[in-house]
Structures are given as C-alpha cells and as structure tokens.
Image (cartoon, rainbow over all chains, first blue to last red; front, side, top):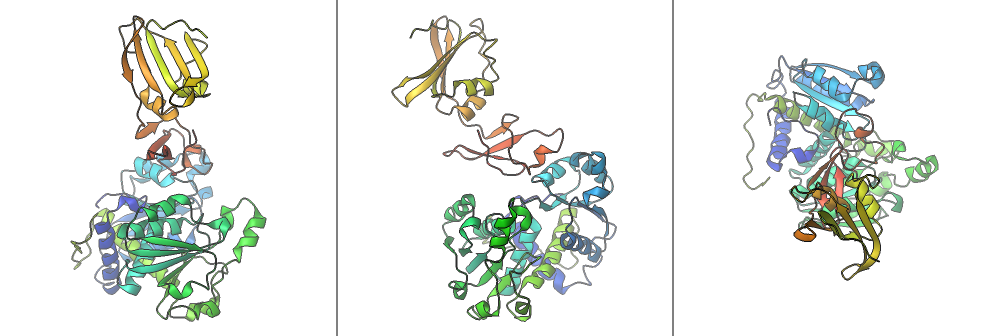
Length: 320
Length: 144
C-alpha cells in the first residue's frame, strides 16, 4: 500500500482492510512502541470545509506516530479564495509533505486531488460522497466489540438515503459477507436502490426494510444510528418533520440484546438520548477512538513506515 | 416517401424513433453543413417505429468518420451500414463503451466537475443492461 491514495474503500482489498484492522488493535496496545513510527514525516490536512472532529483525528494520528502536521481549515483561509484549483493546490502541497488528508464540499474532489498529487491522498470526506476512514472506524468498532465483522445482524436507522457512511458501511460489509441488514427509516429517507442492489448481489447477505425501530431492536447485534442532516435537505419543513422520527432512549434500549453495540458516526443532534451514553452498549465514543487508531494505521501504511514489532496479518481465507 | 440512395457514406438504421436529431448532436454532425437525409418515425419490424439517418460523405476510399462509442451511448439499437458505390459493403454494430470522456456532462450540482477547471468529464459503465453510466468523480448517474 506504499504510496497508495485511499479515495474510497474500493481502493483497498479485503486483506488490506483486515490488516489495517489488526494494525489498529496493535497500535492501541503498543502506543509507546509505535510513537516514533513516522518520525520526520509531515501530514497536510487540507480542510476546505469545517470538520473539527475528523481533522483533529487525522492530525492526532500523525502526531501520535511521531510525525508533524500542517494544513488549513476552512476554505476562506486558503488560496482557493484567490481562485486556485484543487489540482494546483495539491501539486504545490505535494512538494511539502509525505501524505495529504483532504476534506472538500464537492463530491469527487478527493479523486481530483489524488490524480494531481505525487504523494498519497486520503479522502477525509468529499461532500456527501465518500468518507472511507469513517467506515474503517465503524469496522474497527465491530472488530473490537465482536472480534469479527461478519455473522452479524446490523440495524441501520435514520437517514438511509443521504447518509454516505451508511452506504459505505453496507457496501463494505457486503464485501466481507454474511451480514443480515435491517434498514430502519421513514419512507422519505429509504435506502437507495443501488445500495439494495449491492446487498441483493451478495449471496450471503440479506435485508429487510422497516419503519419501526422498537419492533426490531431485539434482533440486532449492532444498531447504527444516523443523524438526519439539515444540509442534505432543500426544504427546512421536511427536515424539521423528519429530524425527530427516531430517537434512541433507555426505554427502547431495554428491548435490545445485552451485548448489542450502538454506533453513530457523530456528531449527534438528539437521535440518541444522553442517558444512553452510560449504557455499556453505547459504542460511539469508542468508535471515535477507533477512528484515530485506523487513521494511524492508514497513515503509517501509505507512507511505508512499518510499526515496530507488528507482524502483518495474513488471513488465507479472505480473498480480495 | 422516396429518398435518393447514398452513393458513398453511411446509413445509421434502427435509431430509436424520434431521437435522430439528438444522435446527430452527440455525433457532432452539423445538419446545416452535411449532406444527409433523416427519416423519422418510420415503420420497423423490430421496434415498431424507428429513425434512419443517411449521410453522404467521403470519396468511397476512406472510412467515414463516426464514433461508434458515442453512437452506442445514445442509440444502442442502431446499426451502421458503410456504403461505397451505392451498395452496403460493411455493417457495424455499436457496443456500449466502458468509459466515455467529454461526451456526457455531470448534472450533479455538488460534483467537483462543476467548479474545478481543466478536468475531463468522465463516466464509466456500471450496468450494461440498464445502460447505466456514472460519473467517475461523484458517482451520479448520467442522464442521456
């Protein structure tokens, strides 16, 4: 994976994803050993739109590996205000750094960036399109909770139409196989057909679509909650009407299995009641930690720095 | 209805009824500057109705300039007959191209192609039966 850009998870084979998952677990238990893995490296975080959480995660990941960070947050600070293209910015920044993480409001911006750059580019979110490291964080959370990412009943709840993290997670879990999906959403925010086609095309996976969370929560191993995002709506009335459709609280959670994991890409608005945070099933802040660990694994891998003491995971059963 | 036969050129047959002008536009053939005949909404055994485009072009020596990839994209059912000396000497069937560059334009207002200068409009075939193309950048489905 040396020098490889990661624009979507399709850029990575299943053995590569599996290896990253194991690297993340290794990093978590060997923090001191890996603290100088990327000494002398520089990461650029080019954030053309605000996303404090993701930017801090990328930056902390490089700092914890011993590298340094440059970058900007908010396009108004950047030369883009002078009319510079993404391609030109990347051609310039490539001369300064070893790896780039880019976030941009336009869909496909990360692909443009990777084609222009001479160093690996990691997509930190391009509009409503792709956000591969979020999916890696989701997978890492399943891996740490269950020791596997297959043979699970995964409920996805809320905005399944515009939620890119949901689509990416479904598609990636389909690649691993053996997952039953329960798609919980109002009619207005149902899963797009091409995502359902993807599940249908996977023999070992299946799905059901339902509207009521409480009636299915008892069947789930994983409940992935999503925010109904205001910026995805053209009409504020539609947003306000649908925002509060699904709220997870202790009452609903009492119907769930004792070891179910609640995930959420964060930030939440009100779809998970604060009281749920103390429940051992709440895994969403753990997901944030896993996101940083996966970014550490990914950043060190694409720049070609090996984690001291780590032995590559080779799963002969997993086919790319 | 009688149309004089083509001597040297091409006959694009089985064009979906009513789309001949759109096909010419995609093929970048200017009807104002080309010697051609359009037959629209005529009977077809295969499809009920169809359009036919006859283009007089060339001297009979060189192959006519027509992009079969583009034709496959806009008129999948079409067939192309190469005419030399008044007879069809060769028939070609367009296939769906895997990749199309700078023929389609992404309609997604959130796509990077709407703002980034100097990049090609690129689409890839994602479903050949449905003839579904998606933007390389944003994955939005192309509208033909």
